[in-house]
Length: 286
Image 1 (cartoon, rainbow, N blue to C red):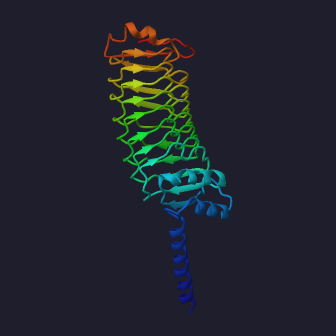
Image 2: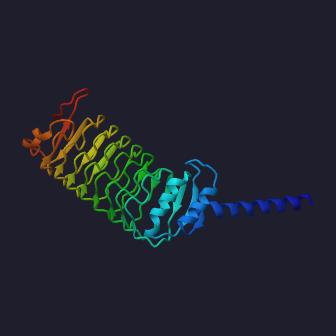
Image 3: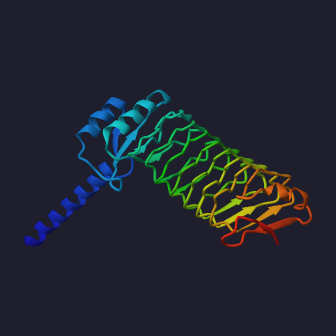
């Protein structure tokens, strides 16, 4: 009899566990409007960033900014699932300064992410669907908790300030589809240690990697033709850089030194390497 009762209790525990997972895991609570989201979040207790409230919504472009405002004002950490939404874009400034938005699933229908769309959010990681072809200026600017992100292979340019001040970003892969890296694109990404600029990139914008203090390795492949002013300025851990023969223009103080002096001699070899001795601001040709 006792064994049978224990079995019943065991089955009940399993059922309750599965019910909890169904309600709280995956997409989480399913809601259909910004007002419903506000009402739901207002009823939830205070939480932490590692235990976000999971919410699933099917939203259109008109609803997105209202949803962002609700999350910003609620003061609750949220993981938002937009799977299945009829979205083709994440509008400009949609979730700007939503510091308690720590996670989001973007639907596969989205082709563009607008300017400052996620600027200043609390995102820690993000998968951008392969459908995305355009990422607007400043889209992830100031996402200081973001440690990793993928750039889809359909994206052709990294615009201005896209990842600026993403101070926790440790690594990023630039796909071979990208042809230009904009002004301030990765500026102040202090945790970034290495970067490979693929051969299809033709230009590296002004200040693109400026103040990336943790950057120790830079590979610039043959194909790049211009490196903007201050592009790698204040990269205090960078001591060596190889400049390929395809480069025809290096901007003022691109590597914390007046790189204009290189204009007369970097064509002498396929790749010319310059080093900076410890404690010196002067770059020396090897």
